[in-house]
Length: 300
Image (cartoon, rainbow, N blue to C red; front, top):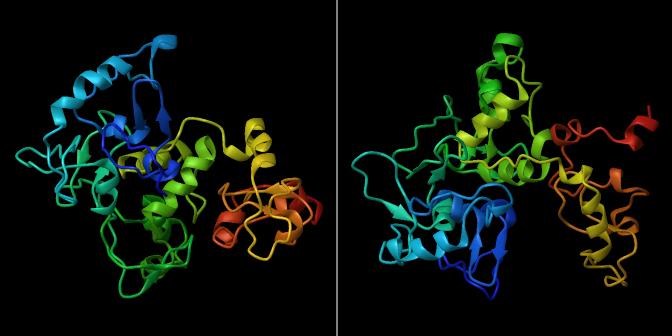
């Protein structure tokens, strides 16, 4: 999605909270949160209530922008590339949004190092063969690049605990698009866990840190569906059902209970309560089994 305001770091007008982080606007700067986190040039020196923008002082952002003004992005060839590969000797630089398209990653843990497509230190430890479909969106996964498709370590090791599920089965059923995992974790927060298995041998914290090393941002906050403010926002959205005759009537308009997208009237969604509404992309057993709902409990 594009807006009318460009990010002062990457100079791009794209906006997607899941992929690029919150688009933050102040009197002095407008910036993607992930552009701040991935920038090699901007220090994070804020403390407590004087932390500026999530720990980044506005004066530091303004002061350091000229340092990367002439850096050319190896993906789009435009200037103002603030992210650079941490591999010694590599000179590749890029805009954070371009890096997502170019199979680059920023590790959202430790020193927040970034790596280009050639020097990504993380590996899936398992390659899929032939046609494989994402277990979240059911769309084709075209490459084995670990920056664009992910299989969790717990899934790779599943045969240790479930001998009836050999690696040949795992390779077909357990890959996901990195973007799908990112859209899930940014909404699930503390509740984020493997979308496919019960993580024998892996704790939730270990899984989340594994994802952070893979370039997936996992916010340290409660899931959106547990936040009272989230439910208040529901009243501000219009129904996106193309056949809806009253799209601007916001009463009883809710978003998907799992991903927080696709607002619909409950009637248009064909359900009676919010916790029964799952958008088509999330209407998958691997997703639904992670979300306990009162409606499902009453059906037992």
